[in-house]
Image (cartoon, rainbow, N blue to C red):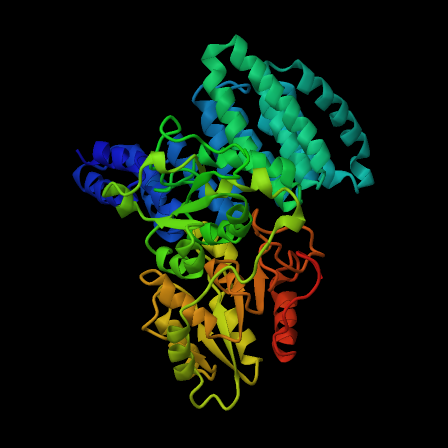
Length: 583
């Protein structure tokens, strides 16, 4: 029973339970290759790459020509050893052909697409162009191949040696897009929209998106069998394109497409890109669609990410001024913080705050409100102009007594040193965490160059051993075991508030420090997300006026950002000045 239970738990997102059953299945019967294929995938999704490799290799020792294990293994290698992955993909293509699949088979074309895109990433442009053009002659309906061709054409435009081939393929491409069946055309058009986003052409991207959306709507009207698939394409691509439009400051379109996150799948227990607790159905309580709130009450629902709730809550003063009452449905970790910050508005009945327990005990009823709305959905109705952000700062208030108690303990024997809070590790899933974080040894080397500062670790999670190691190696840094952001976020906010300034990667620390309006510098990864503008000239957060930006370089890594951070610290950690989002 190990494997069926493992598959069920895996599908439901209970990864811990699924792993237990996969192990049991291996002990009971190792003759099913699905065990190795799925167990390896589970480990990979958690960032446990070394363990995943061992499982895949164990499976391949028993089933060297199993397509599923080989494919998953190739996908993992692509992330950590790209050159090795290319060899594995070519072997996988051979397996498909030997199993009887034709060259125009979807699985074969998918592997060809992987080969082409990986060749492009490795800089093997000529080889990639030849493979792609020949693959398209075999199957001109494969959307991924067409999108990869577009990326290739851009990469090769600067090379005169490819001009003749590029001109030929561009002509082919126009014919391909117009000749494929509707569903394939929709895929290609969405791919082209994404492609234009990557080229920083939001207008072209929106045109392709609209064309794809219209094609999808038409397909849903005439073909019920493909309606779910077409709707799925709209949802996923809408979310991805929307997030990218926000990075390019297109709020009007970006925030509307941001709504697709409520239905866009996400790996792991979260399940959706935007996940929220919804106490009432839309039949029980009307969803707010931007109507006037004068004389009305609205219930705002928190979303799955604590930092996102804090970020969107920075806009609430605008809605509080307009409405009769704004009510917040929050997780327990945030309730003490917002009870304090909105204490005067709560007394005057302009703001009310509810917990999940309030709902369970019947203290929250749909009749108390005129509307409900996810807090992340308010931007599309009231915040489509950059000037509407950061309407009131600070937008968080720490406990002054707890602050002074912590600060007095931190400044002992500090000899007039400035207190600077630090956070170097991003949150979220393991892959994303790695992208947002700074290597610990690299960060230590940077800290060694800083003088006349006492650092305070604001990093959530288990880092006591690391911080104490830094301290023993000469860094003046404090780890306070009495503060645990995961258990008591209000206490953590007090710790943030006792700092003179904060230096952090893009994680919840930025929301805490920015919300308190502390001088803050964000060490922003080159893998930044929709919360930040893509324009490298923008050196300030549009959510928090006190948060400046030091960006990781694609070519120089963190070197330039560290230099900027060092200068900022030596200059006394000045607050970034200028308009809402730039100096």
